[in-house]
Image (tube, rainbow over all chains, first blue to last red; front, top):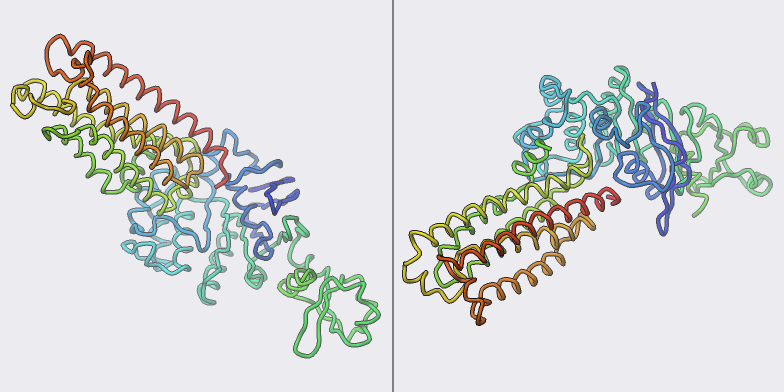
Length: 280
Length: 217
């Protein structure tokens, strides 16, 4: 089932615009939404959550648009925004006492389960929690009302490696239960561990939306030496300096033009770094 | 809506807002411009807006399973509830001053506006000014409130100044009466206050809902 579908989303600001952003997330799918800072990830997510009004385009959840179905849709989605929080000076139990009134499917049993899994102390104020614990709190709330789609904006930013790993495992087990997860991040190594697919946004435009393997298979990494540097730089999609020289990203179809010994398979992070580096 | 209103009272409201309801009792103070009490109640409400912004309440609320416009409606309802609680206190005090306390020297020789129907009409007028100028202005951005409060403060203080002294103008003495047939025309002013409060608040609320729904947060 298609949990989220975005088609030709456009939003124009004075100095930035989203151009025809389209992708979808199926139930049970973890989709990474990647791009460097300022690429348009948060604007896209805010548009999805109806916080920002797109100039054009369609957004539908479970086959329904927000217009006329806002309340019902929000019952079925959860969100967590890394680095942003609300009611910082209130105790978790006070926030939850109010929050749960709004959800038809709220389960205290689930909530207590996630409190203990995430080691969250209900009596603590949000301001007393670390960034990682705040994300866990938002997740606990989302999961306690049975969210079928999770929209997560940089949920792993500011987390230590162990907490990140824990969260990624939670995402995997949720996906197994059929929860769809849209997960924006610039920590691409997290996606390699858990995402099925990625959508890559650059300067407000989607430049790729694919499963991770197909996406990375499109590219190769070449070690640059004097010879390749001179003759084949038309193939280079982006270059990065390294300790021993430089590396360039090329399309896999151009790999034959290079010495096989110099060719390697790039990671998601390497691809992103090289593609973004091009403009520096 | 019931849940949103509960959220306003239990999560968003600042304690000071509740404390300031008691300013409705200021109508007991003799020889004092008691209409200022309405301003103080609104000052208390402004503190809730301040807290709400610090708490990032707008984001919290619009992400709940509610219609965006209902978040605005709930805030207006909250303010109306607080204003009505204080109004009830002030109306009770006024009723006492117009009956059992009418002949008490300090009240009978009052140079400022007495606690009567004129006063109650002006109380509602000041609440309406707050709902229109401050709350209506706030929802243009759902963030900035300082300038709107300054404008409200200036306009409401001018209103207090005029209302507290207008009965000294020849022919308008009836505005300060606390008994007799002079109360009848005061009822007209009170009715105007009620109408202006209801109409002003409703117009401001509907406009704010439309503005808020169009805002990029």
